[in-house]
Length: 97
Image 1 (spheres, helix red, strand yellow):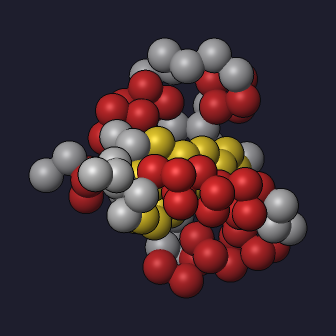
Image 2 (cartoon, one colour):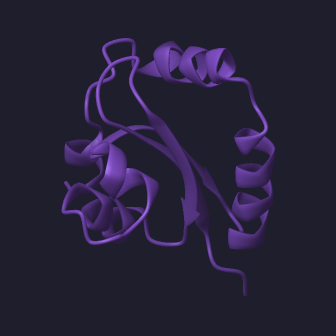
């Protein structure tokens, strides 16, 4: 049985830095980013806002999608965020219900 996965964007503010990642546990991973527990881009740039995500039935599918999304131009990523989250609000509170 496959494990579900997620592709997500973390940002530091509206129209700011955007990080693309994938995970099998979106709540845990977002918590780690929000609290600076992961060294690297998100910690250096203060990317603590979960601004977009998509769910996949299979983690390998999510990882493949992450690689595709990472090749997108920035304006494509911004457009994807703003289609469902025009204010770039933090979706954290929607996933921890």
